[in-house]
Each structure stands twice: as structure tokens, then as C-alpha cells.
Image (cartoon, rainbow, N blue to C red; front, top):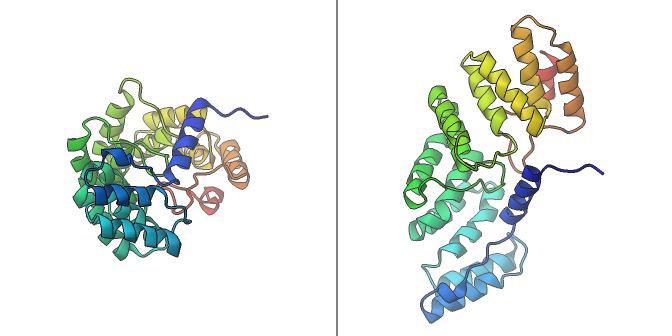
Length: 265
């Protein structure tokens, strides 16, 4: 039976957690109506996005209009269904009421779903004021949010700034590397023509978790240097066909590569 590395198990836990409604300590809530709202929120057993579930959040909000968690959880199904206007109205209210609790989620979703890179950076910067040095992880568990911030800079063509954010982050004591961290840094170096640094990170990535996209870029570096790249290209295609690719349940990863691109290399 294949053994999964420790980093994978820790991120699997994050993914599972991200898909479960977060429970709130109702004893820490002031006011009887708000405590009751919290209890209703915690006891919500309806499936996400169901009428039963959404009406439960409405009851909590009616009892306690300042209960931010109900707005946040009520917003999630609208995001997943593509109703971004309704999602934004609800998540903005949650952030207004409790920025420390919800800026991480809003910033990540601006990046992941809306490709609002500037808006995501603004949220991450604001969150830094509440959580200096530790702004948390993405809702799907794939990235430290500083990595997401760096990717946003890269998407805005601020590659050097993006690289610096990641280099500084990776030097942080006890930093837990994510599933695609070295790959994303490698692509940034590749796009700036620093092929030695790019390859260094792609090779580090291959020791953590290798996948078709990472192998593809290794083959690209070899081709640029007029070295034999066909074996790596074949391995990238094989990995792609075996499903060893960047995956996300709802969107496409930034810097994701598709089979056609590999085949045309």
C-alpha cells in the first residue's frame, strides 16, 4: 500500500476541514439572542446550499444581525453556483462584521474564483494587520495565503516581487511547504528567464510531489538548453494520462498545463 508523505496528510486534513461548516463557541457570544443564533448555526444539519440549510442561516441572522458566521456560510453556495453578486453581498457583510475571521476566505475566493488579483492582495494586506506574519491557508488547503499573494503579484506581471515574497516565506522557520509551492516559484523563475533557479525549484518540487505540469516545465528547460527533453516529455504525458496533475474541485489552478501543451512541446 502506498504511503503518503506527512505534508500530504496535513493538507488532506485542511481540505476536509475546509468543506465542513466551522463550529462556533457559543459560550463566547454575548447576548441571549445571539447565543441562540449561534446554537441554530451550529445545529444546522442541512446539506450545503439546501433550502433547510439556508433558512437556518436566515433564522440565525434574524435573531442576531451581527452574527458574521451565518453570513459567511450562507454565501458559500452562491459562490459555488456562480452567483458571484449574491456571494459578494453576503461575504462583504461577514467581513464588515468580523474582518479577522473572514478576510482570508474572501481574499482567497477573489483569487481562486474571480481572478481579482488586486482585490485579493488588498484583502491579504488588510488581514496582515489582524494576523501579523500568519494570514492562514487557502480554503482548499493547497496554499499558504502568502503563496496565493505571490501568485497574484505574478499574475499582475510583478514577477520579481512575487519571487521575493516566496523566497522570504520559504526561509521562515518551521514553514510547512504546500503541495505546489516549489512549482509555482519555479514557473516564476522560468518566466523571468532564470532557468537555473527554475530548474532548482522544479527538482525540489519533484521530491515533494511530482506531477505532469512540473515535469513539463523541466522538459521545457531542457529543450531551451538544447538538451534531450523527449524522455521528460513522454513522462509528462504519461503522468497526465495517469491523472497526476494539478487538481481543484471547482476551478483550474494557476499555471495549470494541459495535455495539448505537453504534446506540442
